[in-house]
Amino acid sequence: MRIIILGGDGYLGWATAMRFSNKGHEVHVVDNYLRRTAHQEAGTDSLTPILANLPERTRAWKDVTGKEIGVTEGDLCDWTVTEQVFRDFQPEAVVHYGEMPSAPYSMKDREHAVFTQTNNVVNTLNVIFAIEQFAPDAHLVKLGTMGEYGTPNIDIEEGYITIEHKGRTDTLPFPKLPGSFYHLSKVHDSHNIHFACRVRGLRATDLNQGVVYGIETEETVLDERLLTRFDYDDVFGTALNRFCLQAVIGHPLTVYGKGGQTRGYLNIVDTLECVELAVANPADRGEMRVYNQFTEQFSVRQLAEIVQKAGAEVGLSVTVDSIENPRVELEEHYFNAQHTKLLDLGLQPDLLSETLVESMFAVIERYKDRTIVDHILPRDRWRPSA
Ligand code: NAD
Ligand code: USQ
Image (tube, rainbow, N blue to C red; front, side):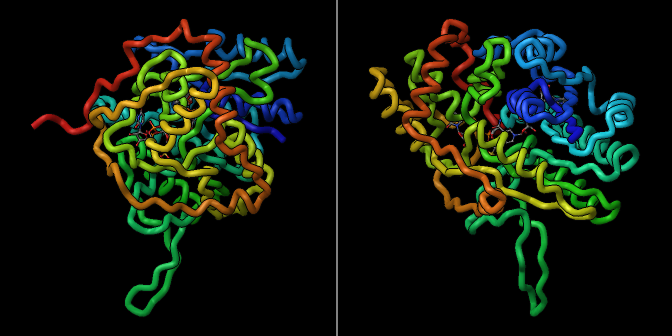
């Protein structure tokens, strides 16, 4: 199959591109290095050393496996770039990771909020129209997020809910109450994609993914040059990845506030499997399927306890700090989200265990001298001071 990976230089995109190429698909990646630029501007960096750009990464991939991955270095918000990629490559599937993915980044100030929403919403609109014009039968597999739903005090369904109201019944998109301008950008995308499916005949799968953890996949371990990025800083690092790094370098684990914030989590290897399953089972024309893509739910307090226990097994003395929460979010709440549709397609989850955490420690240990300690504690508060 001809598959485009948008955002193919990123944490998940690079790993996904190698996976599909390894399975014999024809793969083309697109990226404008937004993520790398944002790190350069902030003075942060991936813990894992990654090669300088996509041409170097794909050359290394060819060296190791003999397989080719095509590259476009460009901005999907620029229609001339998006148009040319879709016209030339004629994809059968489009995996769209190519957005600004950080909630804290989007909450810094007006400029970052506007940039996040413009980048994400505009580039996804370009992708929708490029599919329509140049590859109308292509299946869009779009990375959304569980955070689109927020933390309502009722069970979260997979995308849609059947509501009975004043004697009438309909199945409608599940209500959304997202917690950041970034998460809101994903809600706007979902609405645009749903509209394009209903009105213009797009076929799409919206993957509402939970928080991803992990460093290694079958492909990244083939050669050090194939590593994917791994971030642990206050803006781009996600909870469990940060906690694992903190445990290894002897930094107290940074639980924000009471620590009852509960989210869905999944291993990076399951991200790849879910995306493969979505691509292998395309939506019908005019259909927007929604899958909740996570395997287990944890509170941040539980994650900290798991990391502390796994640390003790390998002789690390891990302390847990409850620090003032820089975000505005519920710190104790109900959370019960359905996530059976990917299991029904055959997903076999790699669940979080202490052994897995220990194996993450081992990789972090190799690169721990690259840690920039100044960027571990959060710097930005989400609520403007009165
Ligand atoms: P990432 O930042 O590492 O990857 C995104 C890539 O897209 C980056 O390489 C960036 O340079 C590129 N990009 C952004 N805007 C672009 C544009 N206008 N044109 C071309 N390229 C552009 O992030 P990630 O963690 O790999 O996440 C990938 C996707 O999955 C994102 O959409 C994110 O919102 C979603 N997601 C991630 C997680 C997670 O825990 N990592 C969880 C749920 C959803
Ligand atoms: N948290 C801590 N301590 C930390 C870091 C985070 O307690 O050091 C807490 C946060 O306050 C939050 C929870 O952990 O309650 C998750 O935070 P996170 O930074 O791991 O994840 P989040 O900001 O939600 O964003 C990440 C990805 C994003 C994706 C989202 C999936 O960056 O791209 O969309 O996870 S979800 O959370 O399901 O919406």
